[in-house]
Image (cartoon, rainbow, N blue to C red):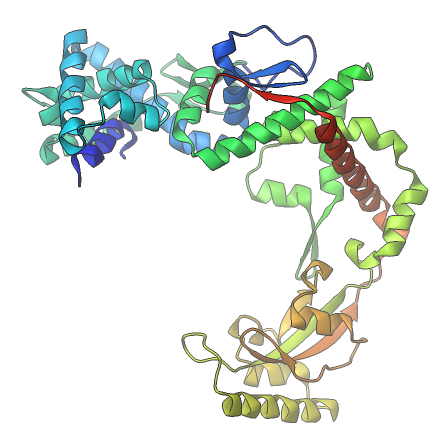
Length: 460
């Protein structure tokens, strides 16, 4: 490990390695240095971005930020309980030693340069250094702090101590049990959302941050249009957006029809957190702007244009796959491939004269994920029509068996077992939700084309 690499580990030793922007009202003035950009003269500030990032990436924030801040609080509380003193001069000495190590690797770089390249300011690093030194002293580290923190035995003791302290700490991170603006509590001590968002901005990668800045810009654009029309987003609007999400079908799993709401719950997505996310809020605003424009006739027209999009005419299929690739996934030679196809054709001839498809799949199919259930693929989403097997199924009637179909790994025989019928009345809510989504996307594009976006002085 390089000495700069050791710096990263030292900073990470504790890791063992308010709300989103206001939905209504006049934006507060912010110092020019804190403005990331202006949308039609309305500023988006670092604070706006940090608060949005906290909710938008809640899972990552929990793992990469809150856990770190919680561990820091636990350590600082133990430092205070044990009467350990870390003086400003101790922090200065540590940082001077670290700066020398960085310069020894690259004479053109300083500690300040390295922190800037990581998006970390000096004030934040001093705070991290203070807690690291306190932990080092608790773990028995002696002498110059930088050298002590690089000793394997001291580092091991530091990590063990953090683990023990965390095991007994009183920690709360459930948003439903915390006051507004609080991200977590540690032994009754609060960690603010603003602080967690600021650290998240330092920790997360550039591409992720650019994505969320774009989402925040979209939110501001739509919010401006909402204000222009004399409207405001309400809790009922957020409820309606959740209803629209749950009206969209997530697909079919075996015989069970699963809604997006079920999928969200199975993934541990909390609707209360979802409500605070910029993308969800922007969609809810767009929905409020366009929902009255969508008629039942428009929803029916969308359904009639592509019924399979809403589950009507979707085939349930089974298949038999004969592999024509080797153990490394490479295609067999042409003559060997032809022999596999001939075997598939021979099987098809037997099947068309009455042999049981499920039994044949169980005996001959090389797709072991489906062979034990008779080759059952379930209902096939038309969105996957580029897959030759899916395309073959959509071309068949119930009971028909396809000629051999070339797939990625071999030759397939496809049989349609059932075709789902969904009348418009059953798909009305989903069709309407899709119309709203289509109109929302169109409106957002129009607002984006007209917008005046100017960069600010602040940088992510």
